[in-house]
Length: 283
Length: 265
Image 1 (spheres, each protein chain N blue to C red):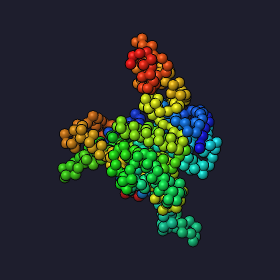
Image 2 (cartoon, chains in turn blue, red; image 1 turned 180 degrees about the vertical axis):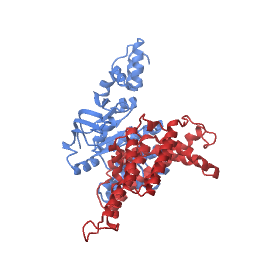
Image 3 (cartoon, rainbow over the protein chains, first blue to last red; image 1 turned 30 degrees about the vertical axis):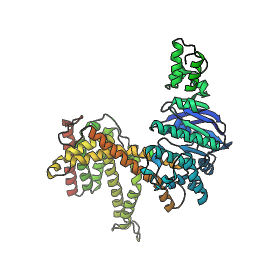
Image 4 (cartoon, each protein chain N blue to C red; image 1 turned 90 degrees about the horizontal axis):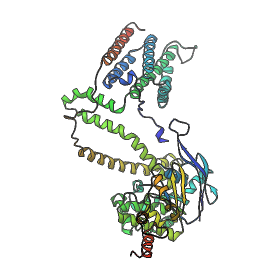
């Protein structure tokens, strides 16, 4: 199972032209196998550029990305091979569906890996299972499905490659609450059953607080904060300064403390808020 | 990568050429092209080169930008020149050679003609924003409405097409990245394989284009768009004495070129 290491990663767009722009600068971090990481940051903070380096879609201007200790940009072969190890689900992935049937679309990735027919079939069914796409849907056209179903099929298309590291760029953007819950549950299940590393770009602070083990906050192409949700959300001023917010429970706890209710300990999930409230005898 | 393609790019500026009415510029370009095709002798080509150079100076467009635009046309230029070089009858350069003096002259003239033609067109698109351009076209073509041609609709479609070129390029980039992340390979393989590899890009691109067109139509209807009749504009086009002068100058140029042709210069 892979470990991901990023060393002094810098990316400059349109280098050498008047439109030159440094998107990320000197980013170094290590993600151990199996960690659930949340990437936070406002639009244009460099998150998307960063994640596109992790499977060699973008070539670093300087620095390196190592998966299992091997530089993924060493040559053409490693650049291709890393796409089987690091699965990247883009924003609004449903717009990439193109095959005639859901089955064929999910099979696109495994087919590109050069697997044999039986293995492809196994993986398609497994991936469809992970995201809760029923057998009956497999023979339908992906264009006939609902928005949430399409999104899940698109994610299955990446999961079918069985990546050891799964990266998702705002997987719940634009979905209704039920769709959001379902997608997050699917991702959690994939991680639980395969032990994969999961990195998720999100603007939903509550999801980030509840699900992840580690949060990396981007600001102007740099890593501004990196730590457990507890550490990151214990500095709400810093987050606000960057232009982000804190989970609702943290905000409520802050307001209660300001009003004189002596709440104990870190509060960034509903459960913690309830516990803290019980302690002071409010409920 | 895809973003580097320039298509009728506009360089904003505030020169006399930029300020001219788009209708003037379109008319002037037509006069220029006719004059260019009338040029037959060296004097005629000399005049045309001078006119183009003056326009470039006035508009502050760097020659490098014009030549950059010429690049995709190099093959056609070279091909035309080669044909003229080898297939013009006359006195051979060396006895027994197929290349003639007349052929060389013809080839050079051909290169000049195509280069000037492209340079003139680029001067128009470099100094006129796509919006102005389609506005000008609409006004120039509006007499054709009388015979039932949907001029407003046609120019509206044109400006929308221009507007969506960058959007589509961005979309293509995105889809390509997404399919690459699923292991798609666009660079290797035989011609047939590579053509097939385009399918995962083209299908989503078509689907999203239709979706976009649908959304745009609804958005336009919501803002009460119902065709061109009675529609006013935010930017009114105004002709000034400069426009008159420009058209007059180019009309004179055309007359001059007709005279030059008469005298075979």
